[in-house]
Image 1: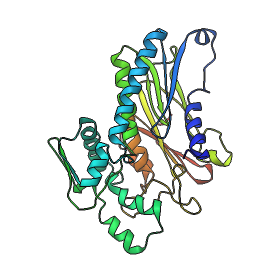
Image 2: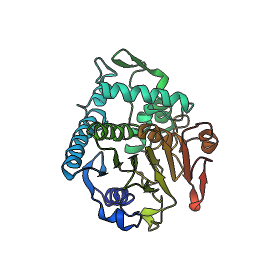
Image 3: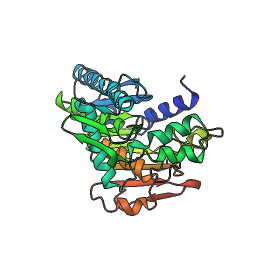
Length: 322
């Protein structure tokens, strides 16, 4: 069932890159091709400029084909997907390259973030989504968490503990957006923007100016839609995570971002990251939501920046956020 919250989230994601034009006569006279499709539980929009309508349409169509195929392999909601098969059996021989690529990156991000990014939290997340777990249930689920217990070798993947499961929700959407961008570039489009529900790849410029992208307001579902910040992006990616999305529980007090070390849901309203790739930005934004000192951590990464949206509308920025 598609909820009102889903449509608000998806429509805001599209609007974030469509309502921030720069005003010059020359810019408004040039064509901007755009196409939006429903996938990955949101609306995904591709915009392109500097090429003919036919070239833009061909490239966007091929990019969407690639992204749809990747979604089918990496979703945890389909038992027939590669990830679904891995979760069901605990091992997967001859893993398809997309799954293998994302798992390798997930393992690397787990190390970089000191374990704050960990896709094996799915047993805890499933408990929280479907019940009010007992302390014993939570202890058992917590014992299944740990990316260090996933063996990735050659083209096979194996969980080293029975009943482990993983969700790639915090990294796969970024990877899929990056792959869509790779197709656009391969087909000769140099200036484009892909917005996959807040996971954004900005290539080149929009008619000679940087692409302008708004950060969503975590209070948007409560009527406060003012953007906390607007970023200019050129050949960069940005992703936003936060406790305001995918909420559940009796009073919507729970959310989909779980601290791997405590099993508790994040209380950080929003974290946005600018990085070289959407996959990196996606994983980092997820990790920042459960870190004790996220800005201090980001200062150590030379090619990335962050903006944290905290309770009561307070903002924290790393020094490279501008």
